[in-house]
Image (cartoon, rainbow, N blue to C red; front, side, top):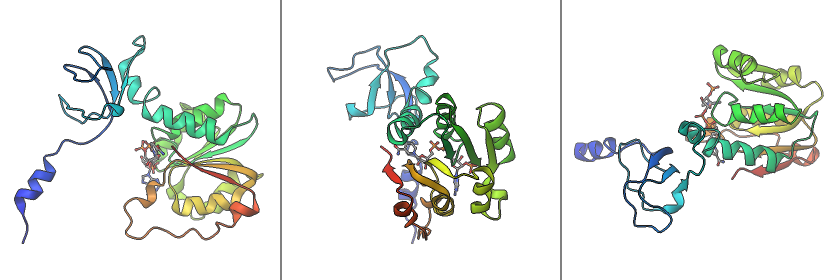
Length: 221
Ligand SMILES: NC(=O)c1ccc[n+]([C@@H]2O[C@H](COP(=O)([O-])OP(=O)(O)OC[C@H]3O[C@@H](n4cnc5c(N)ncnc54)[C@H](OP(=O)(O)O)[C@@H]3O)[C@@H](O)[C@H]2O)c1
C-alpha cells in the first residue's frame, strides 16, 4: 500500500544545491544583514541555513556573482585542489580528464593547459567534444560512447602513456586508464559518477597496475 502523503512530502522538498545569496537576517556573529555569501543554499527564494560552515562570505564583488557557482565556488576549488595539490603537474606531462565537459572537468583541462601539459578529455556527445577543443583549449577530446574499446582509444591519444588522470567517472574508464598509466603517474580520485546509481558497482580488474606503475592515487577532498 503506497503512502501518498509521504511521497508528496518528499517531492515537495526544494532541491539541495550550492548558490549565491544575500543575508537578510543572521543570528551568527560572522554574518550580518546585507552580506553576500556562496555555499549550501537550496533552490528556493529564501533559505534558512543552520550550519554556518556551509556558507562562505563573498569578499570580491568586482566579478559577476555567478562566478561563485563555478570557478570561484565549489567546482573551482575542487578542480584547483584536485589538480594542483594532488596531481602536482609538471610542464609537458600527459593529462587525461574524464567527464571533461562537466563543471569540474572543464576547469581541470584549462588548468592543465596553463601548466603547459598536453590534455585530452572524454565526454558523451559530439557537441561537448567540439566544445572541449574549440572553447576550453583541450588538445584532443573523444566521445567515450562511440568507442568500442576504451583501452585502444587511450592508446590512440596517449601512445606514451598518461602521467595524470583526473578521475570523475570510475568503472570501465578507470580500468582502461590504469593500463595506460606511466611510471610514477598520479590519479586524483575526484568522483565516480558512473557508479553512483548502480545496485552493484563495476569491478575494476587491473588494480595491481597501481603498484606496478607506482601510481599515487589520492582521494579528492
Ligand atoms: N571530491 C569532491 O569534493 C567533488 C566535488 C565536486 C564534484 N565531485 C565529483 O566530480 C565529478 C564531476 O562533477 P561535476 O560537478 O563536474 O559534474 P557535472 O558538471 O554534473 O557533470 C557530470 C557529467 O558526468 C558525465 N556522466 C554522467 N553519467 C556518466 C556515466 N555513467 N559515465 C560517464 N560519465 C557520466 C556526464 O557527461 P557526459 O555527457 O560527458 O557523459 C555529466 O554531464 C562527479 O563524479 C562528482 O561527484 C567531487
